[in-house]
Image 1 (tube, rainbow, N blue to C red):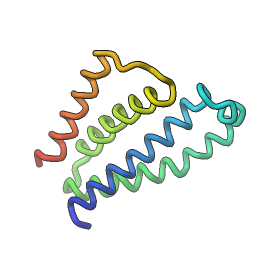
Image 2 (cartoon, rainbow, N blue to C red):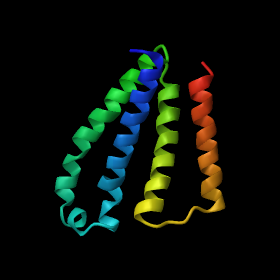
Image 3 (tube, helix red, strand yellow):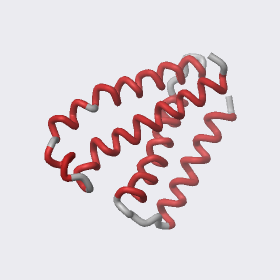
Amino acid sequence: MNKYLAILFIFLTYTASQVFTFFQLQGHLFSKWIKDHPMLMTLFGIPIGYLVIMASREMIILWDGRTWPNRLIGFSLGVVIFTLMSWIALKEPLTLKTIICLLLCALILIIQIIWK
């Protein structure tokens, strides 16, 4: 797979898994249906886990078998997606502390993607 296509695949797959995870774990805060069906929501862990495995596999191939880029990129994307989803779905404000953390995550992502 082309390097840039692999990076796009990884970002889209991790983003999808993080959005689904947000609904799975935080959905009870804003959805009565999710709150009323916790056992059904646990089943969503299977496709979410599959997405993470697929993204991790591609990332480890892309970074020549190294696992740290996988961990740092996954963490940083998770923080960014969780912040956006909390802001959109739960109306949580972006504080200065949160904005600084987002900037640090952006810096981690840039370092991991550009610095090989």
